[in-house]
Length: 116
View (cartoon, rainbow, N blue to C red):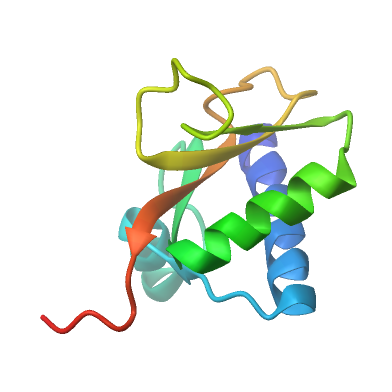
């Protein structure tokens, strides 16, 4: 496992802990879920993990992260940065050499009640 992937695992552990403590739902998405299912590890030089969350849960997650106010973490979103170009939230380790690559990206919105 690369140093970047160790940072990602640590960030995902933090998100998981916050979500469990606050009863928030999230799901691994895209390549993250495929790699976890297929080989239980990163299969390439992954620099980000993508998760899906219901909008109400990600807004609660944002509140918790802001309240924690950890100096070594960065939360970026359209709610916090007028110039942020995506409909995602990005949770980063400020001590990483890959501040914006080594991140957990939560895709918004996910509406669990919506029928396909």
